[in-house]
Image (cartoon, rainbow, N blue to C red; front, side, top):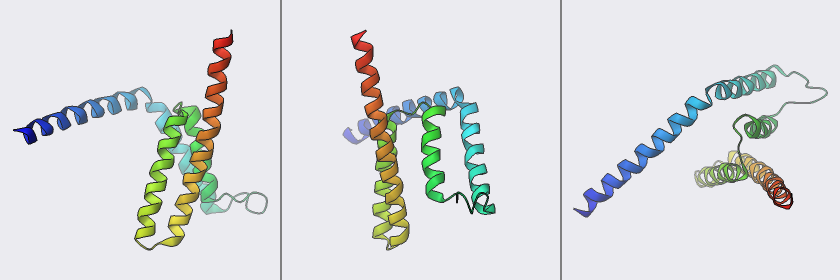
Length: 135
């Protein structure tokens, strides 16, 4: 009986989560498309070697610029960037356990980038919140 109730609760929670995600996706349909086109163009520029002698477009640059673009397109806040950092960190740990050290180090760098960007955004949000209270 208790397991059945737990299963019902999990189904209700997952249904609410699915509804929220679908609603968010429908409201941000154009932004998701713009973000995907941006990432595709960045990977095409990377593979073609554009700007290579002057500014090499690397995977690190693509990930970091995607995080920055997500702030503007999806209105990502510091909490979401900390969540992205946590996901990268857990993924780096899993990859490290599988014995792929190079990919684990690279993913840890992405986690650090998301953490730094989230910290800067948290400072900005705090300053913005405090300035709003003074006025």
